Image (tube, rainbow, N blue to C red; front, side, top):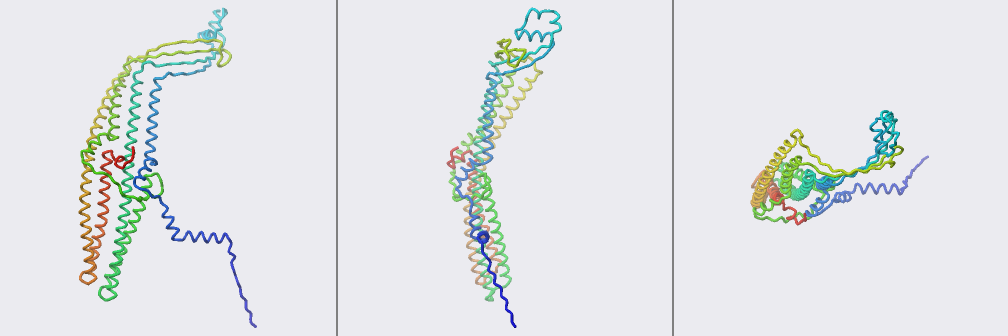
Length: 462
C-alpha cells in the first residue's frame, strides 16, 4: 500500500506586499542611489558669490548690527526733542503743610481752614493729583555732539558691512577654487589608478609568459591598491569641498561648481595700492578716528551749561483720580551748570585725547599693513604664474619618462621598481600642476580682496 501526500503552496501577493517589495528594490537599486547622490545644487562661481551675499549668516548678522546702529541715531536725537509725561499721584496725609497745600490746590479753602486748631492738627485729607508736563531742551552741547557721533558710527557699520561682503565673496571664490582643485586632483589620481592597473596587467602578463617574476606582479598589485586608496581620499576631499562651499551659502546641501572659470584681471601694482586707499575698512578706521576726536569735544561739553524750557498743567481732587476740583498751570525756564564734579571732566577729556591718539596710530598701522599685504599678494601672483610654466615642463618630462620606462619594462630592459618610481613622479607632477594652477587663481583673488576691488572685478555690484 502506498500513500502519496503532496502539498501545494501559492502565496497570495497582496498590493501592500507588492508595494513593499518594490520599495525595497528601489532602495537597493544602484541607479536609484546614484540618482540620490546626484541631487546636489549646481551653480557657477558668480552665482555662488551672489547667493552667499544674500544668504550668508555672517552678512545677515552684520546687516542687523548695522540697522541696530542706525537706531542709535534716533536715540541720540531724542535727547534734543521735547519730553512729555503724564503723572497721577495719590496722597493721604495729616501733615499740616501738605494738608493745607492740598486743600489749596483743590480750591476748597474757606474761612474755617484758617482756624489755628485745624491748621495745627488737620484731619486726614486725600489728594489725587494729575499732571501733564512738557520739557524742551534748548541748548545741550553734549547731546548735539552725541548725535553727530551716532551718525558717524552708523557710517562705520555700513563700511564694515561692505568689507564683510567682500570677505565672504573672497571666501566663496577660494572655496570654489578649492573644489575645482579637488576635482582636478581626483581626476589626476584616477589617471594614476588606470596607469597602475595597466602596470599590473603588464606584470601579470610577463609572469604568465615566464618573462617576469611573481614578485613584480605582487608589487604591481600593491601599487594598484595604494593608487585606489589615494582615489578614495581624493573623492573624500571633493565631497568635503562641496559641503564647505554649501556652508558659506548658509545651507547643509552640497554645492558643485559648473563653470570654474573666473576672469580676474591682473593690473599694475600701483593700481592696487591706489584702490586700497578707499578700502571700506580703512574708511571705517578713519571714521572711528573722527569719532575719537569728537569724543574729546563731548568731554569738553560738560563745561557748558544746559538751557531749556518747560511747563506743567495740574489737576487736583480729593474724591477721585483724574478729578478736577482744582486746576493750575506753570511755565518755567531752567539753566543747569555743573560748576564742580570732582575733576571728572578733566580725566574724561584726558582719556578721550589718549583714545584719539590710539585711533590715529591704528589708522596708520592699518594703511601700512594693507600696503604690505597687497605687495605680498602681488609677489605671490608672479611666483605662482612662473611656477605653472615650470610645473608643466616637469609634467611633460614625467610623462615621457614614464612612457620610456614602461617600454623598457615591457621589453625586459628595466626592473618594475624603476617604472613604479617613474609613475610616482608622474602622479606628483600631475598633482603639482593642479596645485600651482589653483594657487595662481587664489593669488589673483587674494590680490583683488586686499585691494578692495574683488566685487568690482567679479562684476558684482556692491
